[in-house]
Image 1 (cartoon, helix red, strand yellow):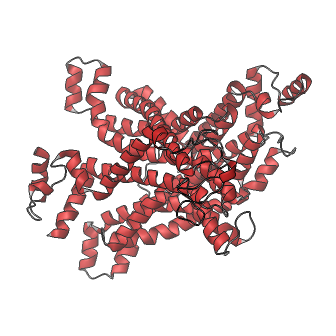
Image 2: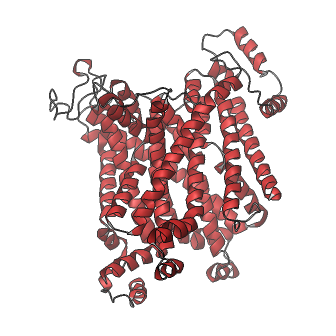
Image 3: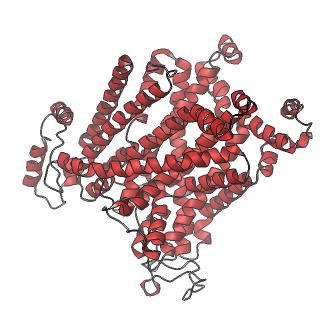
Length: 308
Length: 317
């Protein structure tokens, strides 16, 4: 087990380092940070001062070493927009994103499993057809548009829920639902197809023949055997949401998390803040991947320990 | 007919079905006609292509032409709507229908270009990785694994912020984010075919590697790649719309459905159609592509085909 964890940690470190290299190349070599971040009317002295402040006047290799060292100790510099350490802003905004993400994935799983199981009981039956149609629609509707429709329906027309911002639980409902829907629709299809396969298996016939109650056959035996594929896909959906899909939903609902901050950083040309969000997200994705790998391993010991 | 015959023997113990009902008996077209959702998808996407190609001739107005006097007019079926602007006008008095028709061009073009770019690159790397094996394979697999773990969308935002948004940047960024799936799938198929008799025979006959890859291995990838490409196409259309909605995709005065939704957002309560209509267009397009993808997946996958076949005749008998 420890060999497995070390292996995965090593892989995670490579991922984070690659992201750092890519971001460095992008912002320092391909793009010109001074041009992007300073206003057009800045004087030559201001530009020079800014270059010195960021260390852009140093040789590129030295810049890179400083850069990696700073990232390693989570020193991302000072935000141009808010004039305070970027790390402070991230610590402030990250909880909102995490709350939104985990609520959404919770909703997705809680809806997808029962729906998928019911659909699988009678493939091509009425419920199954409805579930398939709904999930096709769910996959096809743009998330930002769904969010706007929710706002029009539940906030502006019915007045049940607030339109945007953060606050009590009522603020969380619409963004979490919007974020959950695409994940839920993909998950429901997986639950459905694995359950159809399980319910056709020999052992289910045996259990039924010996007179076990149907809910026990389905809920305990078949569902447990489908747990690994379902959890794998749920894990993918979690990673997918974390790795950037909150940006759109947070923007629509003005939810004050990292995604909205990223968009605000772009609007204010604050590359320092934006790249820090990219790093933190990369680290988050690596950590979550590691946790998920360990969880799979605990659930199903047959999974290969090694990297390959 | 060989396909039909083999299917017939498989289903023989359930109920002897007539040959004409067996899957793929008459090729893809006959199979498509039997699959109503797939057929609807193909017809819808065909219509969209027609609209995209002939948009300048079909659109009643220039999509960028402003007319402040007749701004925020509702669609024709609502009170105050007129036949001059079938789907109403936006906050600058631009014709919504014309913008809708022109918007199809961006969605489909970005989708196609991205799938082509990402697909070519991914398939090429996958072929090399699977066929060469050894060191090369290890390196390419490592690159794929690393990039899959990237926070793709945020990195895309960073690229767009540094280089500046445009249609070309959007295509490149989305392709950079999406090539890995093609590479992984190609690699796994090639690994499975690497030791088969026909590949070894080609090698013994002295075929050049390029010829083996292109003539012998690539055709075996056609069906799964087609399905994957279609699914990715749907994903890209959504991604382009989302980027344009965030203001990081297609820039005005060009038109994109995502951009139109973003612009209509501020008038959501006074003019709901500005948000609803372009959003419906996106959903409609993606739905059509998804219908085709799910038909292709079932049709080109022998296992799925058998399952469907068994269900069809299991239920009937």
